[in-house]
Amino acid sequence: MRKKEAVKRQFARAAALAAVVALACAASGCGARLKYDFPVRKTLVYSYAEGRQVEKKEGEFEDHIAWKKLLIKARAPEIPRGGTTIIKLTAHPPEGEGHATKGRSYGDVEVYIDRSGRHLDIRGSGMPPSINLHHLLPELPKKRTRRRAVWTETSDVKVFKMDVKMELTKRYLGKERVNSILCHRVESEGSYEVERKAQDPDSGSIVEVRMEIEHKEELWFAKNGYPVKLVVTQNRVRKMKDLDTGLDLIRRGDRLITETMLMGTE
Image 1 (tube, one colour):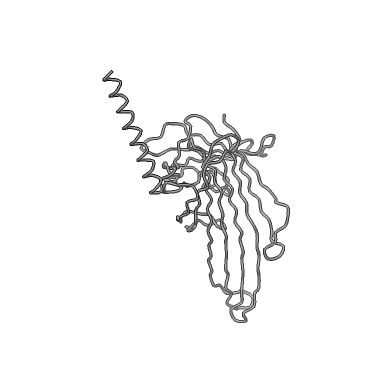
Image 2 (cartoon, rainbow, N blue to C red):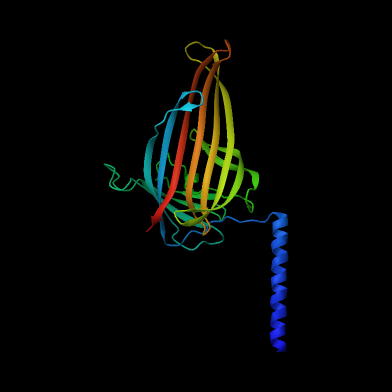
């Protein structure tokens, strides 16, 4: 009888402690911690599509998108060591298609990442240069996340084929299922602007070239530790201005959309 009462008291203390921890966590803003935990020796197959819309007039884009589509296969060949995971990525044409010389393979690369998705090393250069590896293995939030939390982080972003560090405002939107997979959903937004001066070779005038980018990411990351879906949208504007006359010479806008989606496993 005494043993049963002792067990009951221990259970009650454990339950009370769990309640206190939960209350403290809620008060301090604890939440989910996103981290990579790729299934070992299993190949994840993704569709990768990149499309571009041209701006017809300011703020208005054409309806159709010219998509460029690939299949990407991701595989962790061995158990992570010291918190580092090696992900082997291979690129392939869509099912039923092939390349005249490359056949069914467009190349491969090994990406070394830590649990947060930070790219530690990249070996190999066989992947098509247009593919942004951060759109396949995105970096995860550096802090624990809770529903509706908003914070800022500096992340690596590719803009006009340049790698830049951009401050992104991030929002954790809670859990959501994608194709029956329970995911954490995170949205990120930021803007980037760069300008430079150059001399027009024809007129000799000094012109200012300005690039403006609005960047948005929508990530669904599996609770089990791998990306399920990522949509990246960049609204990009290039402007050229004659500094001598003040005239706007060129304004070109476009929208680049990249979608990565988990299709299944092999």
